[in-house]
Length: 401
Ligand code: OVV
Image (cartoon, rainbow, N blue to C red; front, side, top):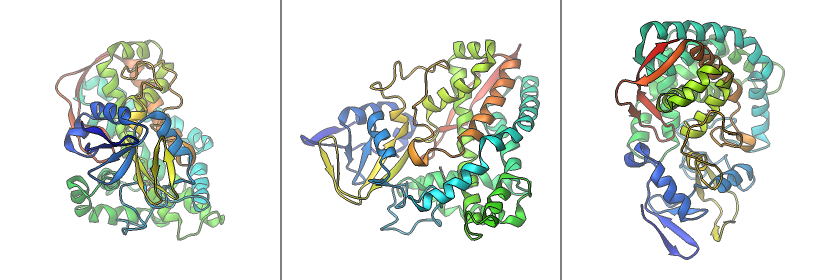
């Protein structure tokens, strides 16, 4: 840590939020960044960071000042060519953002969730039966990846062949939000086959007519977006809809494995499944960070920022800010968790959150009905990504009810 006040009103830090050390254990760095002030200059990158809940929240909500259209990664689209065509929803501001957002909102609506639920319950029950039978398994590959992979691509309406491209593609998207470090360079270097496959699968002809993907193309028929825009909006589903839930599931299992009293509560009251998932999103923040770019000069605390400045929002730090949360470092499935920023906040807040919660709720419910205890049988290993926090391996043993 090195948060020295350069000038009284301009705290500066040498912390690199994308270093191996930070990604391994971000919490002491989050603490230092929060304590340094409402906004901190990150020397290494010549950008700004907000780490307190209040300032992250304000940055999310003032989209006129903190825009998304210059990219929500470190790269400023006004200065550098984006690595892929910008997202029509994530990397746009109103009014363009609203048109795309409305379509995604509709295809991911409560009505559509209702049509998916029964199938998800059957898949969750089958997976939970299989895991109970096995007793020992890797909770990442065999559960956190396996369950979303067994329901999400089908819900979108994708063909079977090539699905192994989905996680590497999303991993690249989330690495690309970071600085030009080894993680980002290597991901982009290897991206071509994944990009090619994903781009192809976004075409209408490659999507089952009753799936979520086809519904986006239907919205183009209805004139809500153009037929040129539809494939790029399908790409948003494939970019943001799988690796996020995989890491959300991983977070939830990692939490209940470390807090057995919370698993015990969930087992006795499977109705707490949604709260258990939501609290895992707060506690682990699978999406750790996003950036904004200032559209004008603006003050944060005593610090004046100019126009065209990049600001890193540390969602994970906001979600454990003691100024906002009691016992922030405890996982408590009965916590009043609303207001966490793990799904973002404001006009860009996760448009797929109902789908994420549905997957998690049905799976954790089925698991809670069957499983007495969950314990780790070895050291978990971390997966390193510039934006996503999660594990690569989580060996566990479960005992049945
Ligand atoms: C929230 C999110 C993450 C990554 C990609 C996208 C969205 C997208 O719209 O492509």
